[in-house]
Image 1: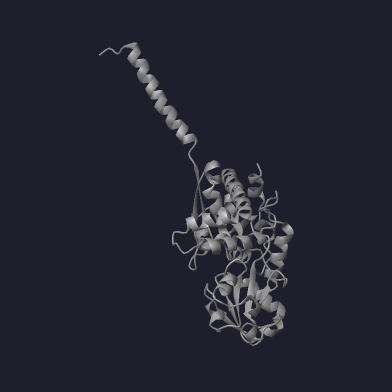
Image 2: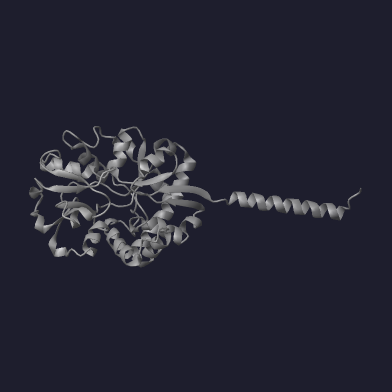
Length: 338
């Protein structure tokens, strides 16, 4: 069979067109990124949800999976198991994991202030930290206990005799039911759960870790150290961070919009606008660099202050050795500035 030149030309054009589309699709395929959060969907993570809702990740050429956390999910273990590219964690637990053998590296620090505090009922007799002795204090574990243990050491209180430590669940029941004089709360979350339960603010006493000089860096972004040797990984994380920081700036400026993004992302249906908007307004207080070029940048001095606190745990320090500058890197943050 003899094909006409016209038919052959048409066939060739069709083949080239198909190949061109395929090549084009491949060239613009979104890069996958999985981020593991520290807790369930709430305004504590509004920047990630806002970046997704506003299309910032898509604009950056990324296909981002945001994995919510929970009481049985340890971000560092998820990262070690290579089930995520990057995780949100607090520096105490991250550095403890690093010393235990998981090569975590901080690549961005979202919250530059601590929102952790102990909230007590006035009727318990606690007016100052000196009154903790002989009392029952609720403490979160799973890595969240480290700042508390450091604080008690600074006060000279032994956790096995001077005070009774109640392993607190992620709720405020111990305070409401008078099982503890004080419980662990975050300014943007559990504190308001106590108030919403009917306890008047004038009947509460709060102790901010930040004001007590024992605060440590909280929500930061961590990756595995070996991955930072791969330029492609650093570039991909740079794109992710740039879009994420854009999301955080938007969330701080628009708490209501941030709340909507969080509520929409919560498949459990337990989130509501009033709570999430209020939470975002308080989370914003912890991101003093929002709206500036410094957002997300880990200040070496802040890192060193946190490490100093973690090392001063008396007979039971969080970490025994200073991890040094190898425990953080500005490579991803610098890539995000491009």
